[in-house]
Figure 1 (cartoon, rainbow, N blue to C red):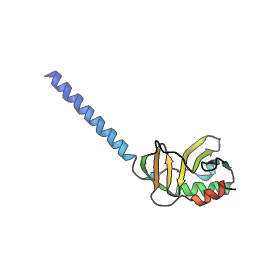
Figure 2 (cartoon, rainbow, N blue to C red):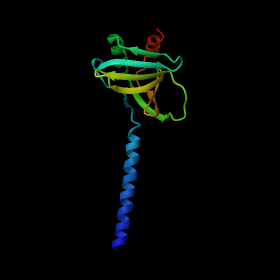
Figure 3 (cartoon, one colour):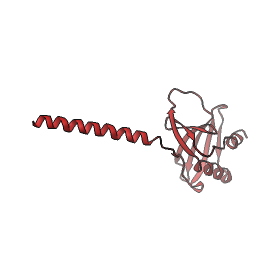
Figure 4 (cartoon, rainbow, N blue to C red):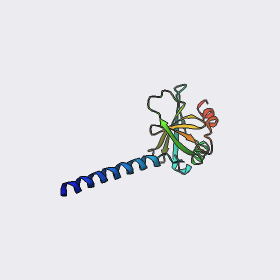
Length: 138
């Protein structure tokens, strides 16, 4: 009798654990903000253009404000895995005032980024892709 109860208990724990993991994974697909930082907390932004191979370092406060405010206003929806996909437009790294990396992601278009191994699509506002393109083409 004791063995049967123990087996039932183990099955229930395993099922509960599996359901919990599935819920946690499903919650990652809820639209959310990727960036939520004050522009004053950013010292520089580097953008590596995957099309030209040129790295641009942005330190001008007006440009930083514009870029950070734009990303703070965008909500993203997680999509499919980016594993196996090649090429990108702008690999972007944001640094805090102490020079530490705050956030890294890749901008592919005005509505798509790659972040933590997944494609994310914009749900409301667009990424100001043209603005970034002008900055890196200087």
